Length: 235
Ligand SMILES: NC(=O)c1ccc[n+]([C@@H]2O[C@H](COP(=O)([O-])OP(=O)(O)OC[C@H]3O[C@@H](n4cnc5c(N)ncnc54)[C@H](OP(=O)(O)O)[C@@H]3O)[C@@H](O)[C@H]2O)c1
Image (cartoon, rainbow, N blue to C red; front, side, top):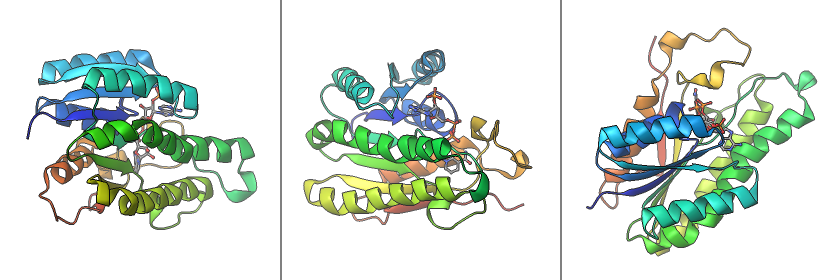
């Protein structure tokens, strides 16, 4: 298999950065997309040091026009086809229902649900152009069970799981694989501004999620890779 052509949203830090670098180590061409261009530029330099070829595509996944422009640039860089699309950009907050701000609810649905849907729609032609494309939607353990204070986040991740399940059925006949990834708590900046006593030492590393994505991309045809759990480490 030749070096994959990869688009990772939310590739400026955390899990997205780790996935971008995992593919870069195998010589992949990788576009990282997010809003903060300084972080993207740093990851592009890391991709190149790791042996890949990188490009930054600034985008706000909530804004269809921004997604359209960034995916267009990404596809030019990748050579008209996307082998691997990782819908990873996402946001998280904890608010009990009585304190849940409607603006926060909308923000989580816009980034975590609208965003992946926009990116998938804009990437579709390039995915179909590849011989064996693979879409990874980074959901969460919160797409499988509820947590207190997580009404908005769980709703968004269950919705992403629904998008994934339907898309898999729709694209399988066209040769595109769709996997949903369910990480447990992972030590990234996502927890920096969220209230709660987070024990970072017990969390996964972003590289744990990246390794699961890489292994699924390499899995032979027929392998069971629809749903990929990355459970939190045993304490
Ligand atoms: N960490 C965990 O415990 C955990 C567990 C399960 C699932 N997840 C999921 O894993 C994914 C990555 O999370 P992470 O922990 O790596 O978080 P992170 O460190 O906060 O990184 C999130 C990434 O998403 C990007 N992003 C946020 N809003 C965006 C927007 N409107 N448009 C484009 N990009 C945007 C951020 O870049 P900018 O801010 O520069 O745009 C950043 O690159 C998320 O979908 C999250 O829900 C995380």
